Image (cartoon, rainbow, N blue to C red):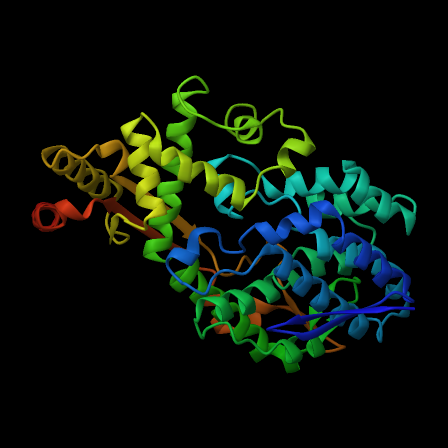
Amino acid sequence: MSTRTYYDPLHQSITLNSSIPEEQMVMELIDSYPFQRLRRIKQLGPAYLTFHGAESSRFTHSLGVFHIARRAINHLSTFDSGLKDKKFILYGAALLHDLGHGPLSHTSEDIFKINHEDWTAKLISSNKEISMILNKYGKGNSKAISELIKLRKAPNKLIISLISSQLDCDRLDYLMRDSYTTGARYGQLDIDRIISAMTIAPDGDLAIHPKGLMAVEHYLVIRNLMYRSVYNHRLNEVCNWLLEQIIKTARNLGPKRIWADKSMSEWLWNNKKMNLDSFLSNDDITTGYHISKWQESSSNNLSNLCKRFINRDLLKALNISSFSLEFKLEALAKARVLAEKFCIEPDISCGLREQIVKSYYPYKYGLRLWDGYKLEALEKVSPIVERLIEPNQSSWLIYPKEIENELKIEIEKLKIKNI
């Protein structure tokens, strides 16, 4: 017998025991090449340029998700001892749920047009090292976990909800972790209370005991605040927009006009037919190296974009969320004209960045309260949760700082015109 302990800033000691088969499986999965790659994928993408402490990795987050899943299943097994047999599937899914993230995490979904859940499912079912480990501990485990992540399909409803719902182990960890690393104070949720309030509804799915209502309300409010203050932060939106322009510009230039190694070439110009090895070959280090090299590109547009990102010479952003679409498009047109006046290429310096976020979806795996007698939808019981159903929209006008003064004058004119 041997034990292994990971010291985590959130969860303290995460200890694994090799004499417990499902934990031995987790140890082997952690040591695999695809999982070790997650050390080189930043949890919050380019947010480190806004929040200097946001340097943690998908590796660290995935360990945290496993730890919460283990705590949750051990608690819920007191209601249904049969859940103990589901630990291999739950632990595998919790640990590997982010295996398919590209460079800079969610940012790569926009810039490279990939779906991380699709790639996670492919790696779990088709990567020889991962599938061999999973199937060693249960025939068909790799297929079952792949389908759970991609299709939200499994024989047990509760296991599905712990992996993919509005109170899953992934969200619980990333809200606390992202709050911790960015220095925000919003994410200090009561994880102990939430887990202790988890129970099993009559239909076998996850529910919350009323004693945990305030802790869950707090968690959902925290999620709303984290999106508004961190994930959709003004500078974070600028950084993501810059990265989109870098990759779009590189793609349009083509392989004859810019340098890219074999890995990046596949990601840029063959990503729809990319094999598993090509996918795994790219990470933050590889992408960062290319962006650094492209500063020397003969293309002024690509070179200038990369220099902005590497040197953190960021564009400005103005919040125009409350205005009509017509106003937003007029404002963008004004910014483009001013950029040209200052001899700045508008295609790489002016843009609109829009996001719509709902803090709670009542019909998308919504949460329910169960006191042993009555099952109720959370939003029917909580006025706070009901208000969180309303979507939040953010719209940022991105522009170069050189035009700021003149642009603000033009924006004021537009406001008067639209009264």
